[in-house]
Image (cartoon, rainbow, N blue to C red; front, side, top):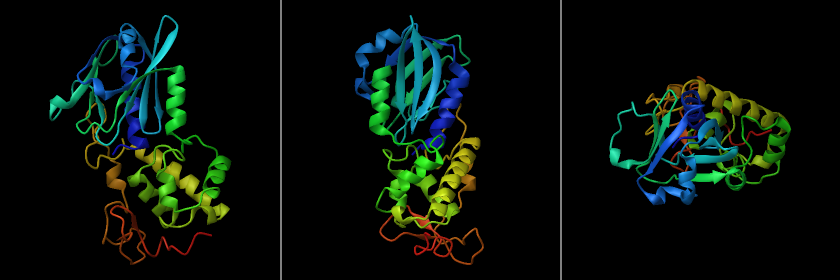
Length: 279
């Protein structure tokens, strides 16, 4: 599933290719792929791409026309991709939207989504503000240390689910939660509100380090993620615990990576992430 780094890579490539381009056509193959605003589709013809933003795991393309502003917001979901036309697509029947442009570096962006867990939304500014407020908490790349500490210390419950709770911390999913917690030396099940201030600050810094590194590597192509130009993310080569069950801990502590009991995809080192250490 694409997470924050993958969405940032997608937004960056579309930004580079289409800022200043004019939308000439928007074909929608399935009406149910547009969650909101389908009746406004005709407005976008002739509009110019002014900005491309990331919100959590979603990508918002900002269009301007006659001093009015609207957005196309793409949820990447589990299998959603925004792709340029040069990319060879498996199962092209799952291309549900095509946006055609003039004056950009790329002539088209396609929304490919075989499982359709994600959707597109066509929104005005007020609609985008509601969309973001309803779905996303703080952004881990822009939130202040003080606000991050306040959030962590105010929430009861296990730390890993909190990091993955989109209305609390936007954009972190299972892959990066595993990697962040290992590097921060924190067990997935430690109680968030009992972490010391030093532990929370370390978590804050490691979170940013991991996410920025993943963005620089183009994200993680574990299963279905490709950037709009078809390239795979290389950060999967940097994963140290995700999917590494029974492999030796990379910290050379002599223990093997284990999976949390009753969970399919939480990985940890029992020595480096001792569940009794959170102070």
